[in-house]
Image 1 (cartoon, rainbow, N blue to C red):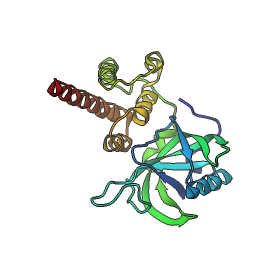
Image 2: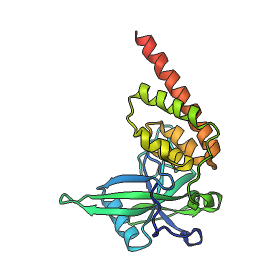
Image 3: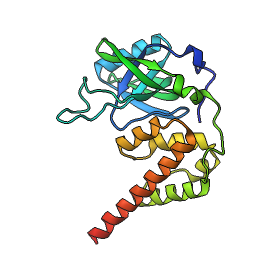
Length: 224
């Protein structure tokens, strides 16, 4: 996956981070996430980020009873992932279209005062220092059964994936890509991003894929 020479070193990661709370969207190290920015407060956020270190945190808001998780004050999940803006363009109708490339996950130690209407946090990076290492193979204990579970899930959900490219990816990149882009529930995505090591994350993902496949097959059987 994409890791550019412009990525910061671990020691240079910031102590304050602008965040973009978005339900159902997670970023993982090395993975690219396209974003379409149009709200005024987030346009201001992107201007500030580009004027600084180009780093932006993606994080999911928590769902709380009686409160819409998209509201500006919704509490945040404890773990998100910072990305670097690696592509950027402005549209004639006032939007910004960008690509965010995952750099390193972070743990929220506190929320800071808003700036120009957007939210900021104090990130703790220490638990996720390995995110900046080169991707490795051998992290999935049983890669073939993992891919079989993925194939069954994609067949049932009618998800198209580039199988040839996936099979050539190092395990870390493969699992991170799937975390970000498979149509899993927000809760499942959050559980995956909070799982520290790739081997454990691969085990969890395989279980989630198998459970989702069985549930979809049972629903389909009931309809018939």
